[in-house]
Length: 487
Ligand code: SAH
Image (tube, rainbow, N blue to C red; front, side):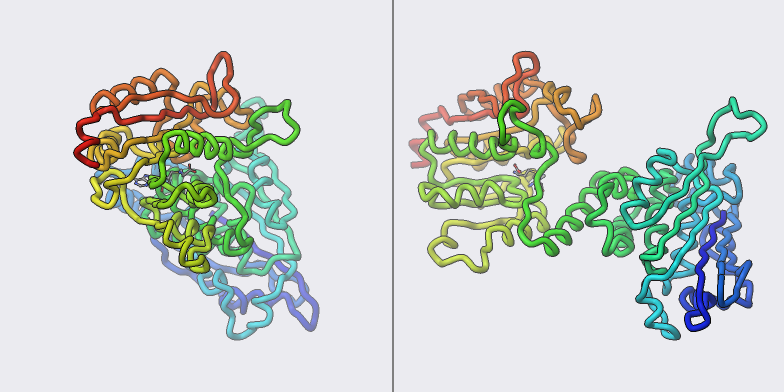
């Protein structure tokens, strides 16, 4: 496994400063042991004009398999490891990325005591990776590196040059050039994007991988157009981790761009293409919820799974809602919500109307008792199906408000989203999406079990064939006896 980093220089700013920046002397070949084998750093050329450092990793197949045994799911050897044992020994992959961060850790952090000023400034860089496993091919390679200011030359490698009819291998030859990046930035791009392209991360993804990703992604990942793909692939498609990472990146972006609203992907889709200024679906959803709450004469309301607080904000604007409580399991979402609502700068009167609570809807919570209404807007689909009865009990059984409004995507409508590949759910964290019939069946059963009547309201354009994009159920308590007792 192999890559080279080259730079050019002048007598005042010699190229050999690369040795200082990498903390590896150009005149010595050095070897380091890493978890996956021996890493070598050597300089095929080192003059004031041009300097090239090469990183080579000799993968130790035995160590790899042993490691796999210890770390794989349930202690079984990880099948994904077989690929590395059989892989071309010089192909760059996520193993090389791990070696890179081990061998060049100070350089990756931009630390250079000998040449601190040079570490902070961009330099002409040329990075060559002769064999890079790249799932997604040259096109994805470009989509990943070009937004970061690299000029990308990428070439697919044939499976066997003697037999072109065999087609392309999963390897590309990659050349990156830029004069705008610091060495630390370049190393951090490689550290994240090599495993992303490899897309077969070999080791057990631990929660601290999120921290590693965010540290390496500092300054570029929050705004990268392929952020979602990078995050989910880097974290080996572990959605819970990818989601945590994206939430944190969102905080970074919010901190940088003030209050800009971060919406679901469906908000970007037009509600009605005929209309001149389409209303985002999320806005239509909030309007539909407000209408239902007003019609029910609600004044004290729970927004369960309030996320970043958009609905809470809309409720605050209507003085008929005297008490508004947002509840979410995610502290990060609540932090964003509190910033959006400017809770710290709110007048006393206004502040007394609103509260944000952290809590899980999968558990009965005394704090949720005694409200007129509860809203579950785009929340149920975020729970694993087996957890849904627990939420049902906590909301309809224990909290038992007079009105409950539930919205959820209508999966039938997904064929109408242009940007959504067939068979995909709308949001990475949706554990399920229901058809109209499935949602009705669930809602009817819930109403029956807990003493409610239920009505269904379409939200967004009601397509004659597939129905509306969002389906909404409005539950109203019918058990007069209990209501009288509660009053
Ligand atoms: N209601 C908002 C946000 C929907 S996203 C809107 O309509 O835009 C779903 C939200 O539910 C997320 O903020 C997530 O953190 C929250 N959530 C998921 N599972 C939860 C649980 N078990 N308890 C509380 N909140 C939960």
